Amino acid sequence: MEKIKKLLSERKIKSRVKKLAQAISIDYQEKNLLLVCILKGAVVFLSDLLREITIPFDIDFVGLASYGSHTKTTGTVRLTKDLETDIKDRGVLIIEDIVDTGLTLDYLVKKLKEREPASLRICTLLNKPSRRQVKIRLDYIGFKIPNKFVVGYGMDYAGKYRNLPFVGHLPQSAR
Ligand code: IMP
Ligand code: MG
Image (cartoon, rainbow, N blue to C red; front, top):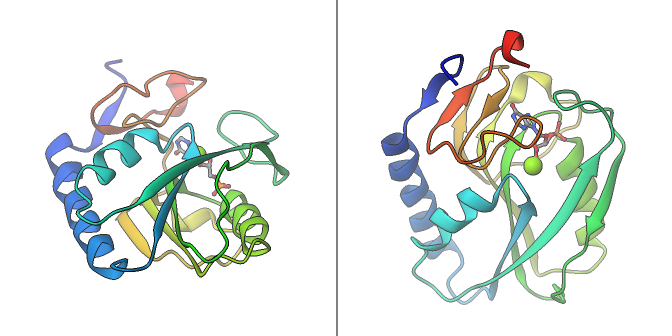
């Protein structure tokens, strides 16, 4: 645990999450908002974010997996759990923990667009643009971070560290 270096403190995250929720609450008035949370990493972000949203909304979850090792994406994404909600004509906002290569979101966006939502936008806590492989529009971003493997605040390494209240860097030596 002592190997993890803190990148974003609880306080910093909390204040940024509140700002994002305020913007969403303004932008989605009368838009029939549905928050689509990507399991599992984004659940902590979702749970803090939704408590700061002041307009009516629904939530639903999708499971996505990419083949490959824990810290590298191979590019093949598949759906492991689909939505239960019909998203046609809804204001859909995808909630993600971190966008890295962009391949996961690219796959999900294409899949959900076929179902004809009224709008489809993305809210991510973290953006790691240096390794992007596909162009993807991010509508709400918490923080831009350097090309470092991070854990905490819902994000894991091999299932560990999700419970850390802050976002930290897990160095190569600890993996
Ligand atoms: P992408 O498809 O490369 O954009 O990867 C997105 C997914 O990979 C995220 O939803 C995370 O689950 C995972 N991921 C990417 N970078 C990190 C990281 O630094 N820490 C933990 N998970 C990460
Ligand atoms: Mg994820």
